[in-house]
Length: 401
Image 1 (cartoon, helix red, strand yellow):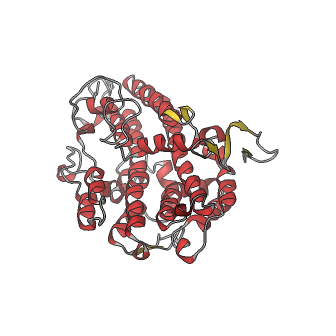
Image 2 (cartoon, one colour):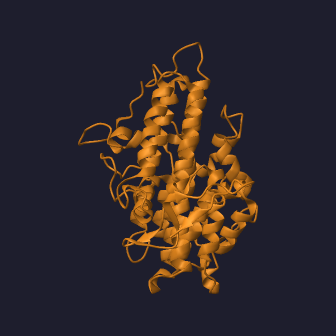
Image 3 (spheres, helix red, strand yellow):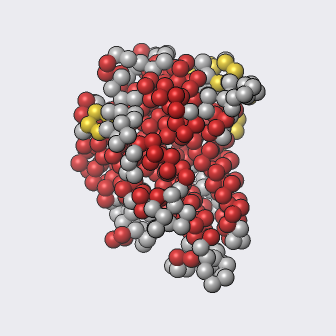
């Protein structure tokens, strides 16, 4: 039975003081974030950390290195090409590939932001993205959030899909998970699952449930957004509902894999993907409001517009799969370049477009919550009230505050 101790220390499942790197891997984000701190970011160091990982060792990756860049540049072989992965093409990755037209869509975004160059996805959607025109603060957000919510977000899902593949391709009638500490490929189902949890949390969250404010990965995003939207255990405080539900699913999924109940893991993964989508929607709404409604003079900034653009880039393919018109509305309101033209998001239009897809995305108004600022309710979905789906439509209408 595989036990990557750092994974469970990071999630507070076991006690300990000295804990190793998660899943034998120190994410390049640790060095990447340091390179982007301070008055003048070190773009050369940040680029190196992203591409080469700064001692991010993994026995499974080529040359012993696993990098944030590689999560995306290796996506075709690990998430789409059926010759290399039994369950490929993976459904969620296929949705993103179909939308952007690039297997390495996430790397195209992050690399262009690091280099300060102009980039357009092959599909032409959600662009062009001219990072050369952005100030350092905006480029930093494009890099940090693109790395975490485009590269890593998708790779987390890949690990869970890989766990199902490993479980289903067990050979010789053996219990594939009884010897999961083995290096043999057929015993890697639980190991892959553990890695998915590890990458979701990141190495900076520490040993406790709720993590640490130093975290930079998707786990930390869920904690930040729950405070903004009142979707923590106690409203704006406590563990996020997203991470609470995910923790339960992580534990259940692992237990099912240990028993070799491969098919029973599929609905668990589907639930995980839905929950992981919630913070991306929340982030998109938050910055549509901050830039579009500008409650404070400092909110209407190039930096905040960049944050909104990258949040929407991370979730638009899922919206497009549900409602093409809704995705176009969101992209037209939130993409790069609009701020510099003096064009700001129509928050009501963005909000309505997202809400029209909640049912299809498998999330609810209660999941997304209501945007608030220092306790004052802003124009956003009310978290506890939902209107019934409109007759003849799968769209959910959310109550207004």
